[in-house]
Image (cartoon, each protein chain N blue to C red):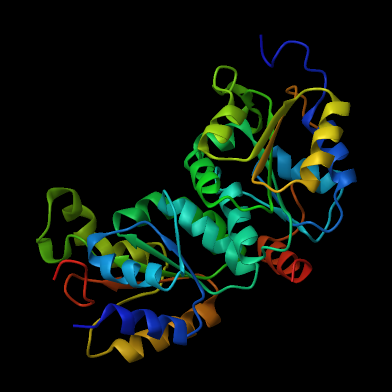
Length: 165
Length: 192
């Protein structure tokens, strides 16, 4: 399992310096660590977080938005009609609820279609694993710089230490 | 009666008066006619013209304001937009960025799509902002009050909201003739 502080440090090491989002239990450890470091600006909806990140990007920051995958649905219009159209990159740290069909009913539909959904929206994505973590983060930074659109890192349960182990 | 009885000023007139008082402040302008009118009245590289992502203008401005605490950031917004992204009033009110001025041109209609009524005739948006934690809020109708209050807000720590009652008149304006990626690049360079 990846420790939350190591994960946050790795994001800071690739240059991320603005963090916002809406919580999820899988991301609990990461958000706690970000708050400990006074790096996290909480948002009330995921589209607001995405728009806030866009503003921060234009003001010189490298932003990351944390959200549950249901938040991708909520923020889709902002991701398309702001980030994609205006060439404003953003790192999306998305918890993959409903992964392999094991979750509460409200997560199952989105959980099943996650990769296809992101492919359809032309949002590049990878799923974080402990083994490939260094390479995953490197890919995240490179895609952000090169493509200038949102890029998603999916996190399944148990890969990064949460609040409730 | 819509808009509020006796409102003589159009949004473009109000906007022109405000743009005269601004120089190099970043201005985030919401989608629809407001962006097109601002582009026609005074196109500046410090303007970020939105198309789409309705309701998100203050969130974009908040991101700029947090990243650039020494720059005063202005939002030109509409009543339909504020109603759509009302949660952001709470985020702004809670974070209390001092360098944040939220102007809401309230014509009580969705003007860009054919003047369907909003509900801002019965929901006073500046009171919602005040309850959410904005420090200074004002509601104005006349041009001289608008100029007075905006000048005052430029000197005061925010977050501030200036709600301007305007009529439904829209200017004869075309679309913003700058490609969105170029709007981003130009804005980024201008606010560096």
